[in-house]
Length: 130
Image (tube, rainbow, N blue to C red; front, side, top):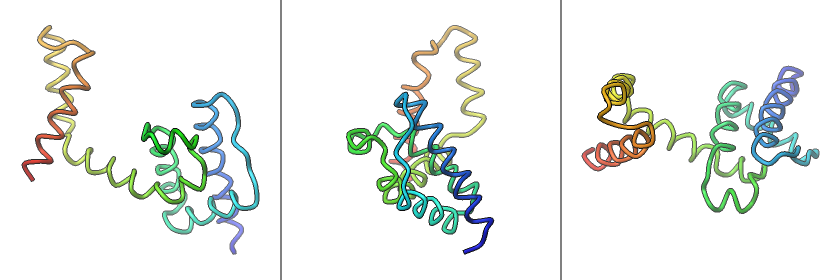
């Protein structure tokens, strides 16, 4: 196993630790098994891809993941699914869509509170039309 993968695993661990701490107010447990999972994520997705998946995972409000307090084991099992869901949403929502909503808010047609609801409905509608 290369030294760079060990270092990259540590970088991914730090992203996980910080995001976990931000969410739960405490650091997660670390073990050899956790280190192994971090290295596996790096070998599967590269350092940046692994870090992206960690961020998406810790931002997830999926009830099962929340109930299990965003464990590294669940990260290993669910990260690809959550990442793909995020990418699908991004593909269904563009920068121009955001600019349009911003103009609607600026003109007083929509409120900030209505933005996310509007966005989610548009994504659902576009997904159904595919």
